[in-house]
Image (cartoon, rainbow, N blue to C red; front, side, top):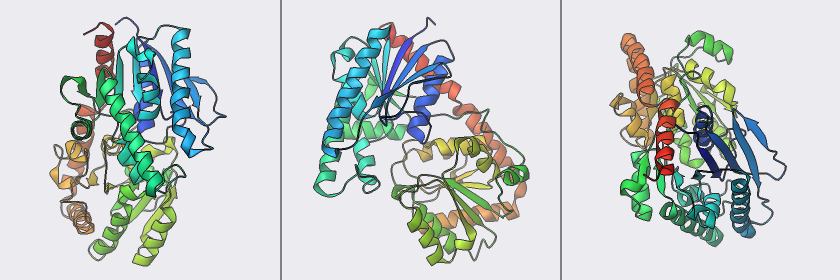
Length: 405
């Protein structure tokens, strides 16, 4: 393929990678760059962020001071628009790739977008995420200000998905959200799932992995790595640990991640009498993630709301670790074809507790079956979710748009 010029503009900057949105953006950008395409990422960042070039990708921060919540959105829109115009003036840009509605609107509502094909990646509903993050930061407010913020994000997102040449979703669940919220469906919507680095996330000897991250033996060792926020369902997981404790006396839970709910979660573990069986790791560095997946007998994903894809799910599977998850968002699309028993019947505490009991029983009564399941997890990830497959599809989409198809 003739090299493409791809300009990616987002409300996040992938340095460092701290969440799913950054991971999707970065893996797509560097995957395209590794194939010889010219890729530049403009991402919103703190005013002191600096330009960088990494893995062939040029990264330029969009300065967006947050001194005033009222002025933040218009300033961020104008900053993204100004920088996109300047980048296009530097050289050839064949395709615009937009992530998130604020910076995305800054580009798609300008004359820049009228002259070039564009792809908007719809990770999940931005106003729904905003409402679920109420109180997490000074910008995520409740009351009238919060309702206004969510309404503005909905208007911007609606404009983005209706103006973009194509809309990229990571799951059928997100495609349904797009249709139900904004009436966008049909041939303009392209489903390309998220992925996993199959070289980084791979099975390893469990005892060595546990020693590497200083985790004591447990039966089973349950790991979850999440932002410690309400929608992640971690309160329900702690309650399920307490409820299932008499039947799974050796179980230990390791919670990685940080967030506004950490103190409340630690207090809840104490109230439930499981503090001695729960370890809070705090923020887990990206380079340490594979060892925690490899160390676990089970990865828990107790999501309460809004799981647009679930990169941690496929990372755990690629590591040969089964995932016990609530049937929320896109998670059933990933796990049901592998083993329906990995999905709880609903997102309740009782269903999670039953899932923990069932898995512990399988470990005791059918260890060979669990070993086979671990191998099946890896095969499932290899067959469906390697980043190479995602980048193949994105490259084909961008190439077809450049040629006018």
